[in-house]
Length: 204
Image (cartoon, rainbow, N blue to C red):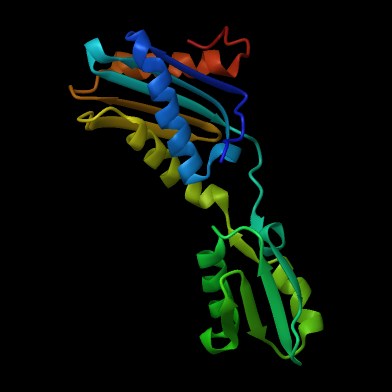
């Protein structure tokens, strides 16, 4: 499955032959963690001779909440008092089940087929719109841990000394085998400013 294109995706390494393999690894990790939609711009610098890995990311604005309506069709079931949910995208299914169990109780939710859920409710007419609007994932809440996960999984073996910061839409990650140097973090800050592509004059 292809990955959503990022606005900017740059991988720089002092060992040129490693740039393409790194890029592939990072694309796979981003795809695996389903965060391509959250990332606007991404730049990575790898300097093996300094045992240094730097990643800066600018997130897209306003990540939408994921609602049931985004990945499933909700309608009346065949029996009285039954709502049927047809799943179009399976990945959010575990979170959906948890939400439905919390609201209706486990006994009211059945799964006759992998992509079909049936819920016994009092009045399907009032429940269908409520289920459609049910939030099953707030990407902002889970994004921080996924970004750190992405960065760690993209880092070369043995780079266990790590620094990261996430504020607003900016994420910085620096890793090394050696003790962390402030200059590396400062470099990453500068990389982030360049990535923003704004006029950064006046920033010390």
